[in-house]
Structures are given as structure tokens and as C-alpha cells.
Amino acid sequence: MGYALDWVSVSGLTKDEVLSRLGLIDTGEAIDYLSRGGFMWAMTPDGRTVVATEQYGWLTPERLSQLSEGASLVAARAEDNDCTSAAWGYRGGQQVWSVTHDNPEEYGVIGGLELDGDVPAELATIRARLEAERSASDDERVDYIFDVPNELVATLGGWAPESAIDGDLQFFKVIKPHLPGDRAPLGGKGKIWIGLLILLLAVGAYRIWTG
Image 1 (spheres, rainbow, N blue to C red):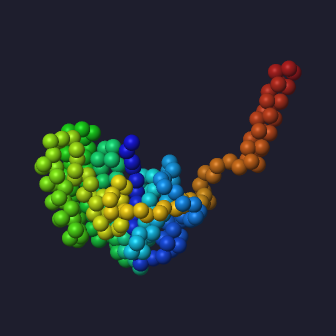
Image 2: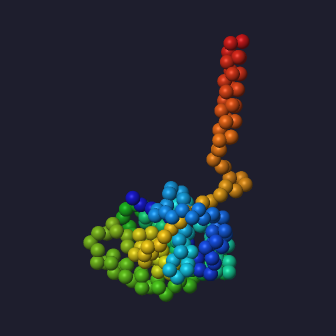
Image 3: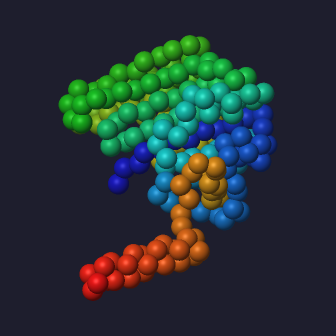
């Protein structure tokens, strides 16, 4: 089964500061995997805060810029079903670099990399290794270059999906509270009022029909 995730690894802020800037609340509930559309956080051994979500596309440039004010971060987005991935570096509210892999064909032509800004030196080593693995492989359907952005963020930030670098990070569930304007789920009182409204409409329709 594939995955479609956004994740970010932040240095220079506490965990509470990271979650507050993202509008998230820590539940304290330890989890091993993301629920559908959910969020989770973990702390790396070197003190970086990692936040991951299944809300693909949630980490917008605006969110990353605000999150990196007075700090630095690396972030990534990956969809392994269509083999698209991207990585970004931000510092002091500004994007510093990006590495993007795009494979528009579901099968067939293998996508390449698009680089922008002052990309980290680690990229060259990761890219060379994965290109060598691609050259040595007999399976042309495997897109090794898809993993370049993911492994770059794993190396710099301490975690990426299906990466050996993440070790045994303990993740915790976080929630995104409903803000003004959000469509909140109906509580018990809301369901009661809807039930009464349906009943009144039914009674009115019956009286019209029998009258």
C-alpha cells in the first residue's frame, strides 16, 4: 500500500512552539502510524521536532515560511503511487533551496530532478548512489530517483517514510482544532435539533396531506 505524506523537521524551536505555529495540539497519545488525514509528531535524538501528516499539500509555502521564522527546517512531500516527491529547506522565514522529482507517467519514462537555490552538499552523494543503483538494476519500472528528496530530508532532518535513518522514533498523535469558519462535526445537541426539525417537517407535511 502506498503513502502520500507531508512532513517537516524543525531545528531552533521547542516542540510546543512548532505545534503552536502549526495550530496543532499534542494529545500525548503514543502512536505507531498515522490515521487517515491525521497528524503526528516525534523528537529526533538531536532534538529536532518532526511533524507528519496525511493531509497531502497541507504544508504550504506560507506555513513553512512562518514556521521557519527564527529557526530552520527541512520539509518534504511524497506520493509513492505516482512517484512524485519534493524537498525544501527554509531558514529565517525564507526558502533556501528545493529539490523536486516529477514523474507524470504512471508507468514508463523515469522522471528527473529539478534543483533550485543553494542545495545541501549531501545531495550529490545521495543522488550518485541512487543513480548507480538505477544503472545496476534490471527493473526499469523502479524509479530510484524518487527517493532522492526523501533521503535528503531523512539525512538532514532525521526522518522520512520507510527510511532506515529514522531509527525508532516515538510518534505522538496531534490534533488540529476547529477554527472559526471550519465545518465542525455535529455534537449531540446539533443532532437533536436536526431530529426535531425533521419531525416538524413531517408533521407539517402530514397535516397538509390530510387537510
